[in-house]
Image 1 (cartoon, rainbow, N blue to C red):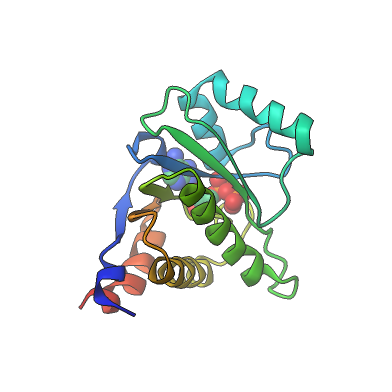
Image 2: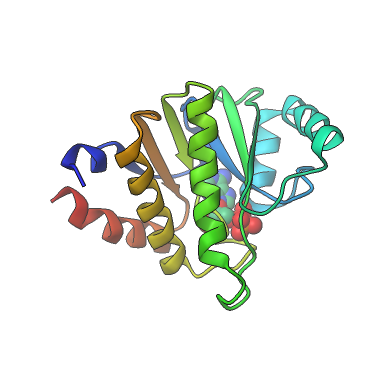
Length: 180
Ligand code: ADP
């Protein structure tokens, strides 16, 4: 792993709706029609244009499957785009959850790359209402993103936006040894 790869990853604690990246990622549900947690916050802050775009996607392809991703406008957000992905619901770890969570991160990065986006910010997908253990989710997130960045020049910068102190500690742990 080249040292420069780890330096393309940033950690930030706070509200992802305030982050000025080319795209922020939404931990959506498969209906794409809004929900609680970070999904609710993004739709509230970004305004109705995001939901309008989501409705068009639903009409075209009928929602979004677990592990997949779709892109909409960022509406009134500082971010230009929102990439919506559907994380797995934690079911004890025997329902392919790690592979599905890794698909979320990879498919968001690939979609960002397709659209020529240089910067993308991720929330901690599945670690809220979907109940994925935070330590396990942080390991999947960091390993998957690092692996992708090592193989692709774009996106140039990835930010993990942590909301709660436990995720902050877990991501600090994951990232500390990479940059030392
Ligand atoms: P999921 O259904 O995928 O678990 P949630 O929205 O319930 O999605 O939670 C995902 C993560 O997003 C949780 O770690 C939660 O603390 C975090 N979160 C909630 N609101 C925000 C926000 N405004 N900015 C960044 N992260 C947030």
